[in-house]
Image (cartoon, rainbow, N blue to C red):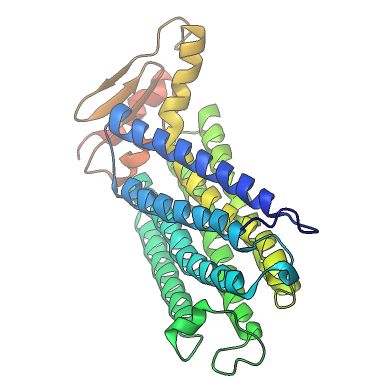
Length: 339
């Protein structure tokens, strides 16, 4: 049903934003697979988990777009009761999918960390965070499923008179709690790879560039903070169909931006090829074409050498390439040699 002619309607923004989110997520994840499968020949568990997260985020955004036809973005007074029932059904499904979508995005980043470093302290922190994410997701998912005495009632509109369901205040407390834990987890997931790169890899201009790329994750943390503030400050009971899209925009941004941040480090080999393609040369002292070769133990970029040694956990830094001088390369060779 079309509500675009109703006063104050803003559902079109929901459609436009989600279309852009789907497009960018498809682009970044597609490039990630291209690099991992075709260029570095190193697909891993993190790519598979990210793929499942991408499917969940795609479904979440498409459900958000579809909910516009059920009155999302229009004032509640203009929506017939039958259409309103469909709106609440879509909203509940969206919430349940959201819990697992953001959890899978975070799991994908943790799996990437295991490729980047197998340091014992990083492993312990990663497993601890993984347990927290899993516990948080299961608790929120089960709570949402059991908010009403009958399972089918969670898909229906609920008012203050519905004693058979938890009140809106209790529901919002759960969502705020889930959001706060998510902010803490996202902050840890942002800082861990930056710390690993800063402490374990050769310092160079390229290292700084990689850290700056990872720092885009600050925006993912910011979206989580804004989302929690909206849940606490907005009154969704009086005009839920009109107010909910404002929250939905930040909810969808949180998951999609998290997926992008998990994809960016894998795109470093592709990004390094761009200057060479545009200029015809790369700067290995200045004049040689950039070439890529693969064998069982190393990936070589003229101007960069990154060694991969299965016995050395830190050699998983091959995911990104860093400009190194001749002396640095010799040191890297010794570090990568079997003990």
